[in-house]
Length: 178
Figure 1 (cartoon, rainbow, N blue to C red):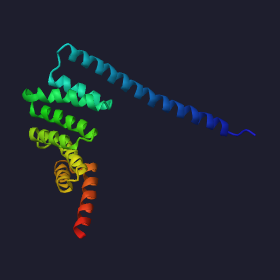
Figure 2 (cartoon, one colour):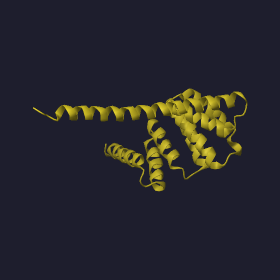
Figure 3 (cartoon, one colour):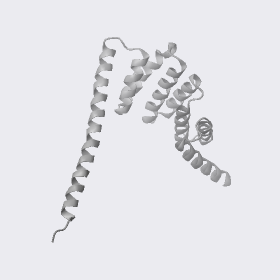
Figure 4 (cartoon, helix red, strand yellow):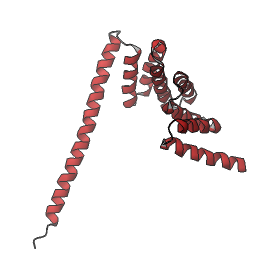
């Protein structure tokens, strides 16, 4: 009995372990990169060398690490000093701050920052999409549908906006039928 089954099983196991090793290695590399960036940026902040761009970068790393309260504080400082930044930079900062607030279920404040992002850059589909989500969470369905429709006007292929707009339209239609 010379069955190739044990050899195939062993090869399959080795391939699976190799793939798993690569995936774990990539995750470890990303975490170490974020930790190094976090330390470097926090040192710049302690040294008093933190401009809005540096604060935005620090806040972004904190968001990736799901440190939402710290990200709100950092991005709040970035937003305060962003008056001299280009409008696109201001939009990025306010959108990130809105995201950090929404992650903490502070939707009213998140909506305010998403709208500030849109004041700075009206054709910003990510901020429109995030605004729609926050409005939806606040049960402001018609406004949320409008935000998703604006997102689709700017980015017709946006799958999140399409899916949420369809769901909202169904919900709004069912409430009108009643």
